[in-house]
Amino acid sequence: MMKKRIGLLYGGKSAEHEVSLSTAHAVIGALDFDKYEVYPIFITLDGEWRRGERLEGPVNTIEQLQFGDHTATLENNITDFLIDKKQESTHLLSNQQQNSSESLTKQSVHFDVIFPLLHGTNGEDGTVQGLLEVLNLPYVGNGVLASSAGMDKVIMKQLFEIAGLPQVPYTHFIRSEWVKEQEAVLARCEQTLQWPMFVKPANLGSSVGISKATNRDELVKAIKVALQYDRKIVIEQGIEAREIELAVLGNDFPKVSVAGEIKAVTDFYDYDSKYKDGSTTLIIPAELSQDTIASLEDFAKRAFKAIDGSGLVRADFFVTADDKIYINEVNTMPGFTPFSMYPLLWQETGVSYSALIDCLVELAIERYEEKQQLHYKRD
Image (cartoon, rainbow, N blue to C red):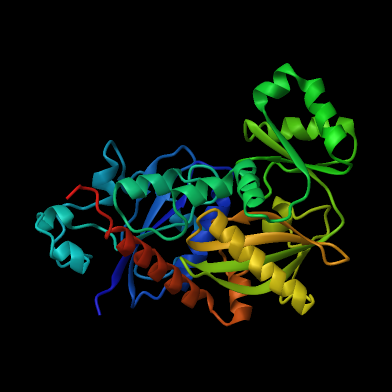
């Protein structure tokens, strides 16, 4: 069987650059090199694209994934960087492409699939997904709409509201409102929400820039922190509840994993708790009633469909002491190391880390082949 050629896209001009490097390191370690030809594509913090040589096996350190100037670097043409027009037609052609009347040389692509391992801005927000759509390349994970909606917490919450999913009270505003009408913004928060409040940049992940506020002074400080990362801010009502997460996998007919619970030592599951100090306990499976589990599974699928998800999503919920459920958010490119919640949930469900990667690649190709059936020319 011919190996599938995969381009791993990681790094990125994002506050979550380091998280992406860890994800790439873990995925490379789990890939079956008897099934795949693996090419690393590194995006620096400055936004420079660099493609490394084909990997022959796992790499020992994360530092090896950060290439120097001796590697292939994107100069002007992203098409030449991702699509090799000189490849022979035996490489990576679908049956439909082989039967096309167009030139085989023109249709030859360098990769069977691109695997974006980018977290946060400029990677998880629909920007890279849009680029790959324009280049007509198969890629793992969510499309443009789901990625952008899943990144923007305001849009996400509005879609959840339309889908009838329960949420905690919230409000939102943009930087210009804060600059011109600070007092009015603070008054709106205090009138519509109760303390404590959680202040978040609307377009960021991994809990970067999130703060808890228990009074007005802390609220002002938290807003200033969040505005360093985004022009749009979300402020949510804090509640006493357990943090429960489920993993969703699939395209049109998604499956849901067992539920897991996060118990953080800090006030909330922040960046350091997730990636640095190891102070958070993950309980898988979570101890919940069967009725609560059934509701969570239903809500997770509805959230996935509300954003038009594909591939993978982690759905995060709050569950109160009296078993009331509130959806918090979905993450369209969740942490993906073997020790991250998403792969751990599937492992407990019976899907290993390497099998999960294989499944995501197949789902990407399935979605791509379906899109190739669309007509763009009137008969």
